[in-house]
Image (spheres, rainbow, N blue to C red):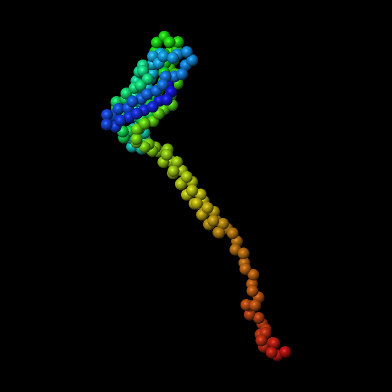
Length: 165
């Protein structure tokens, strides 16, 4: 099925799901198809998400889903097969691209990990840099500074020696 659309109303807790029949070269009637609709409701339980799947078989190009709650997140996908003798394959076709609806934002543990991993990597890098710096300070030999010869005490007193000449 093509162009899957979902229109929901919060007041009535209903969603109208509509689509176009699959394109075939020889079938022009939409009555030649029946559809399987899979609606997945995503529920957050503690730190994980659980999916509750609802399926239905319909023979027209729309479906009224009556268990909609605006605070939840849903996903719908549809596939088609032959409804009668219209020279269409009796096997179920491929699922359509899932269409998400509902308003609850999903944040999973994996998205939190995406923030945690770079932070841990930066902290570990900083820690290793500090360890290497301390190690290099301890192991590197201190280079002695050259002596300044005029600050040393000399056996000769230059002022007295200069005046006596």
